[in-house]
Length: 189
Image (cartoon, rainbow, N blue to C red; front, side, top):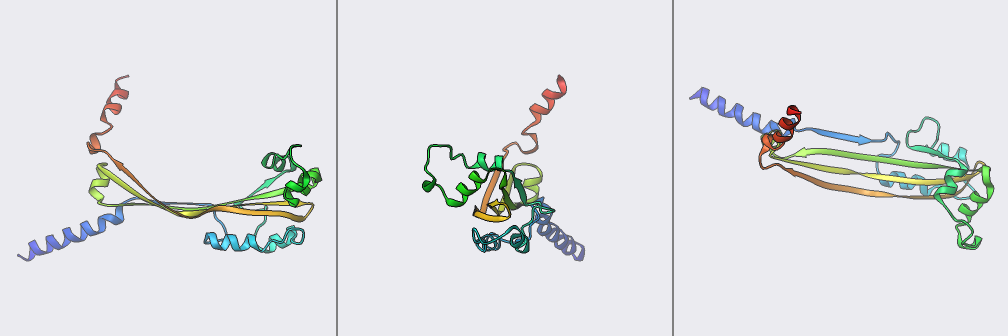
């Protein structure tokens, strides 16, 4: 009787721990911000025509050694903001206009932050045998464009997705046999 009880207890523990055996992953660009709100607050501290590149570095945004920052040349800026001759200067944000007109003195930063977590949930055995896989995807993304004329910031804007929560469900009614035809077919040729 003791052995049966012990076996049942061990089986229950093994099944309860099975969920911990499901795969999980994390994808992120290493950044100083732990949330969308923190990143937004940093960008909102920028004052166009007052904040400088050095001030931005003090806020923690620096192109050297920061994997979240992409440098934009004046040509990159012109491609991102194709104002052409169709609009009048007063129809365009003054910072964008000043940057485009500045030519080679215009540059920018593109800040791109991504925090994504993928956790498989559900029954370990059903997942392992590929009958049904449920993946819970959570996280956030943040982007910002900052334009400079010389070392002075003339324009800053941010965007992104403050909250991401998606559920991916993959169902294979035949479980591990679902793709056997492709496997066998490939081996025959």
